[in-house]
Structure formats: C-alpha cells, structure tokens
Length: 271
Ligand code: NAI
Image (cartoon, rainbow, N blue to C red; front, side, top):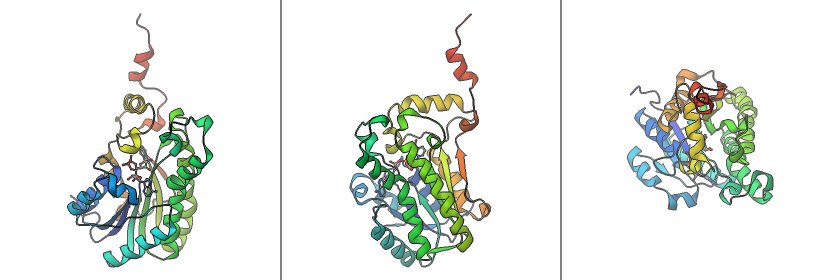
C-alpha cells in the first residue's frame, strides 16, 4: 500500500457488517497506516459485527447515536483522548428512512417517520460537524466526508424521502464546509456513490433493477464498496488538500450519461 494515512487519526461512522462501505474504508484506512475509532448506533452493535472489525484494525468502538449531541460529544472527547490528539479525518456513512422501512410511498409519508429519517440521514452530519467545530477537535488540513446518492439531483422514484435527505446532506457539506475551511483549514465533501449491495442499499425497493440498470449505463460499470473506500482514502490523504465543498460522483460515469448502447439495445426492436 502507499502509507497515505500514516500518523493520521480518524473517526469512522457506519460500519455495520462486512458489506458496509464504512467497513471497507476502515480496512483500507488501517492498511494505509491510520489509527481510528469506530462508532455506530447502540442498536447496530447488537445487530452487526463491528467488534470483529475493531479487532482486525486494532481500533476501539465507541457507541453513539448520531442524532444525539450528547453521544457525539462523548465520542469526540474520548476519540481525542484514545488517539492522542486532534482528528484528521471523519467518515459519515449513515442513512436510514423509516418511510422506506415501513413501506410508505413517497406521496403518502408519515411525517414523524420523515422527520426521524431526516435527522438520522442528514441533520446528524451537521451535529457531528458542529461538535467537532465547537470542540476545536479537528486538526488543520483535516478532511470530512459523507456518503450520498445521485437521487439528490435526479429522480429515482423508489429512493423515497432519502432523495430529499441526501439533497439536504449535500447542502450541509457546502454550508458547514465554508466555516470549517475558513476557520480550521478543514475540507468537507460528499461522495455520490453507485448503488452498492449493502444493508442500507438493499432496503430500497427495486434495488436489483436499478443496480443492473446503472451497471449497463455506466461506461466503467458500477463502483464497488472497496473502490468507494479507495476514493475516500484519497480524500483523507494530503494529496487532496484543496478539494472542498464538492459533491464528487464516484459512479463509473453514470451521472453524465444520457443513454448507453447496452440500454438502447434492450429497447430496440429487431429489424
Ligand atoms: P449500511 O447499512 O451498511 O450502513 C448504514 C449505517 O448507518 C449502518 O451502520 C447503521 O447502523 C448506521 N446508522 C443508522 N442509524 C444510525 C444512527 N442513528 N446513528 C448512527 N449510525 C446509524 O449501508 P451502506 O450502503 O454502507 O451505507 C452507508 C452510506 O452510503 C449511507 O449514507 C448510504 O445512504 C450511502 N450510500 C449507499 C449506497 C448504496 O447503494 N448502498 C449508494 C450511495 C450512497
């Protein structure tokens, strides 16, 4: 490997099981020489296998519900203590829609569910950054990344209210990124990833259809979770210090396609 993160300290949110994008980021960050704390919602500790990852990467796990300021403050304080200094990188890899889970159609949301999903999937990013900013816990030239999906810009009917949550998340990256850049030389970006077979991904109705469609549309094919981790590592490294306030598509080219020959073939009647 390249030692891209040698000596860097991080916090990684969202590793549930070995399919999780955050799991791959943790494995790659470890290979690149970083030390980090793993965190997830207390309930995910019971459902997932995060302790296995902690063992593998020599990390400690600190549970935190990303909607709780108290939990996040505890996480940040303990992480600085455990890692022995300010934080250089943070991954926000969190998403959940109660409307999707309960099978509510986009046009018929239960607004308590909407509010909850928005808090978990979008506002939590603001809360995490707010605690880091006010605690002055990020080191200079640090990097914060959140994961997002292109339904923030284009219509994907079954993505439901997660589309709106992702639009909000991407906006927070820009708005908070301004203050973090100006005051602490910290960069903030979102990575807009291809559909990926994970617990969150497969929760979306029609997932198999649209992962296959995206594969056929993208000149390079869909980006895998491991490829997403590699891209994330590059954004945590010192090689990308002036990249900030961006929504970066990591999707094999999908976002700039109109139609591909492979898709056209499917709709073209034989002569
Ligand atoms: P995943 O299901 O492995 O990860 C989602 C994580 O969010 C889980 O670890 C879960 O425990 C955590 N989480 C949920 N509620 C939480 C809370 N209150 N506090 C703290 N953590 C909480 O799935 P995946 O795909 O790795 O998701 C990671 C990110 O990537 C999400 O933001 C997702 O929207 C995004 N993404 C996923 C794509 C996909 O097709 N899988 C495509 C584009 C973006």
